[in-house]
Amino acid sequence: MTDQELVARAFSMHRFSYAPYSRFPVGAALLCRDGTVFTGCNVENAAFGSTICAERTALLKAVSEGHRDDWTTIAIAGRGGDYCWPCGSCRQMLYEFAPGLRVLAARGDGDFQAAALEELLPHGFGPRSLEGNK
Ligand code: THU
Image (cartoon, rainbow, N blue to C red; front, side, top):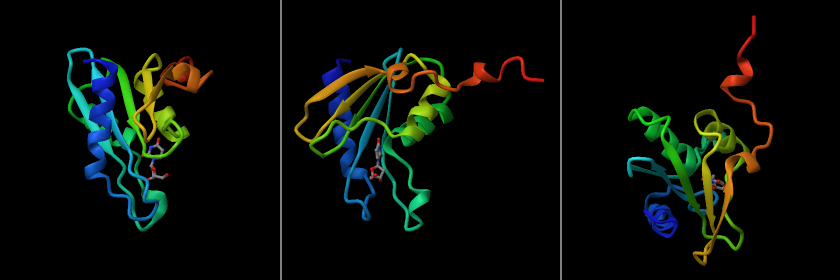
C-alpha cells in the first residue's frame, strides 16, 4: 500500500466521524506489516474530555484485534489548512507499541507530510523506561 493510498483511507473515515462540538472531522489509518489496515475516526462526547481521537480509535481497534507489534505507518487526515499531526496523548499511546512508527499528517487539500514518531515525541517514556524499577 502506498502512502497516498493510506492517506486516502484516512480521509475516507471522515464520513464516520462524530464531531458535533468541534466540527473538525479526523480520520486515521494504521498500516501493519502484513498489509492489514485499521481505520478510525474521532468520536466526541458531550463531556468533552471523554472525546477520543481518530488515531486512538485505530490504535484500540488494532490492539484489541491482536495487532500490536507490527505497525509500520499511520496516516491522519484533517480538513484544516494545517497538517493534522497527532496530539500529545496520541503520540504517547502510539509510542507504547511502535516508537519507530512513520506518521503521515494530511491537511484538507490532500497534501501530506511524513515524520518519524520519535521526532514527534523525542525522549519518550515507554515500557523500557520502567525496566529496573524496584
Ligand atoms: N483530533 C483527532 O482526532 N486527532 C488529532 O490528531 C487531533 C485532534 C480530534 C479530537 C476532536 O474531536 C477534534 O479533533 C478537535 O480537537
